[in-house]
Image 1 (cartoon, rainbow, N blue to C red):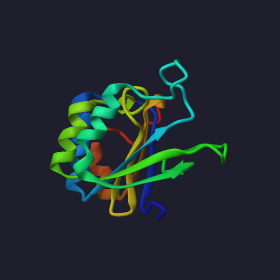
Image 2 (cartoon, rainbow, N blue to C red):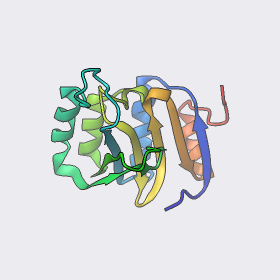
Image 3 (spheres, rainbow, N blue to C red):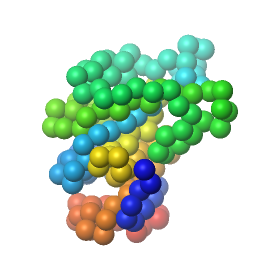
Image 4 (tube, rainbow, N blue to C red):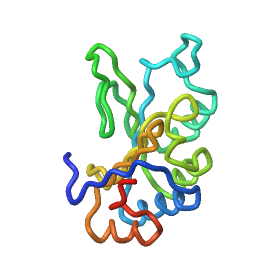
Length: 164
């Protein structure tokens, strides 16, 4: 589904405190699913294993009770793999208080969402509508918000209109 409302792109990270507030606001605004991917086309560890850190696999194991689906794909909300024969594994989970606690246990910034530390490109959804997506290695976030949601994000200290 295509995002509805306003789309904002922020090219900077924010503090751990603000990061936690953002995820809490996402849940309060009806985000009920999240996705991330495991890419097998990048050798993050530099050892030709194309694996992530053990921390990543431990995190994913702890999220197992919240798993909704798992698919192979070459595109997702925040990125794509240009080579059609290469794919990533996209995981979708329920977003609730318990899964939010797991996310906050393992991450405290936008930049955490990249291999090998964690899976790539966390995206939060309101049902099927993307609400917020991270590209960790770029310290970039994509926001798909209504005007009132954008105002609420601004009130916690994130200026979505500041491109610097």
